[in-house]
Image (cartoon, rainbow, N blue to C red; front, side):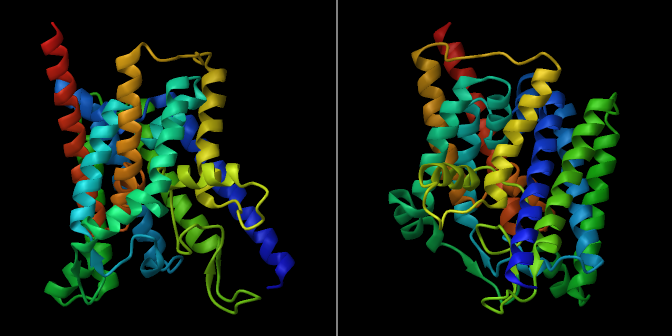
Length: 371
């Protein structure tokens, strides 16, 4: 492959990622797909419907990723989440911060982008503050703190910290067979649990669960198959095109927000190039805007007062720091990471949910105290 062909392929990868993320924005806006909303429904009303939608999306993503691996389309050891190091404390601390923060900020990273597309100016502020906080945690002052504290606490394994690998270790199965078995059991289990819910099978619920799960799978294919070049014409090394990590990636919406702001600020710097993460951020906003305009639900919305502003600012900072510390958000770890069966991702997702419950309990306490 020559340089011109490589550049053409890079452009195709970026357009594919943009299209998929725009579709994500359309679906999320139309169906109100939201992790915080799902947790809130359970805490306030005992309604598990939206959590079942989330479970359906995870189940589809797990099975989809396993199918790509089983057919040899992608290499599971070359993804962003493949590591022999289990950063359990970073996942717990970062996940809890992110979960608590997304309650204060009225939604996670993806919901923030969806709300921007529908005219929410509060979410635009959250976007900027979360991006700055996440960039500082990637490379700045909080990055130094992160590396010196929670990232030091980890467990190193001889093989990847992955549920499939762990089953292989205790069962004697081949890692690929074990991974497929775990994926099918977990994925199908989540599908059955979700679809078994009373009055669950509405068009919007099915669209959200099946659609979002399929988009995560498609993003893995775009990044891990379409964008994979076995031999770069200049370095002669294998490369994954248009990724910030240099590995296969799917959707995530914390660090990519930081990269987007960095790209916008330093646009004239030729070393700052578009990546899957950056175009995905823009794509979700564009898709949400398209859907909200088409459905005539686009509305400008601002802060309700000082307390509302403070909550959103604090929540944005917590999401930025927590999302990078945990290596992902509700989508980055909860869908993309979990689909690979990464143990760190499961821990991070559990911590995010626990943090969200704590955040909701805190808001209820403050409300009751003010009465």
